[in-house]
Length: 382
Image (tube, rainbow, N blue to C red):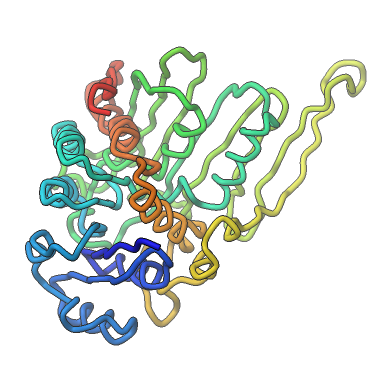
């Protein structure tokens, strides 16, 4: 069986992916890269990474002929630049969110991927979390009927995060809030209305020039009557963490739980049965979402529930986010298999560009009094 060599760049959060790659049956060797000697030493000792596979020099990975693929898990402003360099070096690229901070950066990544002929995978966690896999299965089985409306949200207080997050415009980094619903819609997003609501503290607003506490968007699609609502906040709102969505169909609907210890609710509309001769009979029940580890190689199934980060090894995304719904081994598996099977990964750069562009355009709309902003058609770069 053919195997690949992968490098993980950025170990503050990227440490989570190192053992998954190490144990994936399609991976031969793992390199790690970070500016922090302490993080490199931790990876080396904890996961038995050889000294020669640990480096502070990103450029050395690009020139290393042994490395087939590079997974970027660095601060947001570096993503597009690093991705382009990886692709231009003739290596496959996986990149954490966001794909880019501007439309120009999105185009740069897509053009580099097309020119290189290599894979680019947009590593959006919500696409492979349990809830998304569960809803995707129900949609494929036709259980929801016609989709009537969807909404997605990402609620997170980012006080105490690194300085580059201070005052970050909520929907400029949108995909935890919108990706799942955009995937469910299955149509190209064609435009968006965005509005801002509330105000954050003046000292937070200075860095990016956006003082909205919330940004909210309505997304329209090509050849569809469906509308998706997207909302996100990052500061000065009294609400706990959640990356969530609601799906409303003619036959069934799904609502995410309000607080983490609860279960989500499934609504079922029973045809032909009416209460008091007037309203349809709608049943409702809290449901338990199954784990989807069975979709993975046996060697990495444990990582849908086991993470690097815990009470002793802390990272803010895990303290607040609960481990991204078991998505990490699914992301790794899809990236590795797409390379081995010589096919495009899901999601690729084109989907990543659409999903990021929804937020970039929504923020532009919110900053210009809610005017409709068209989302570019990226199909020519496919």
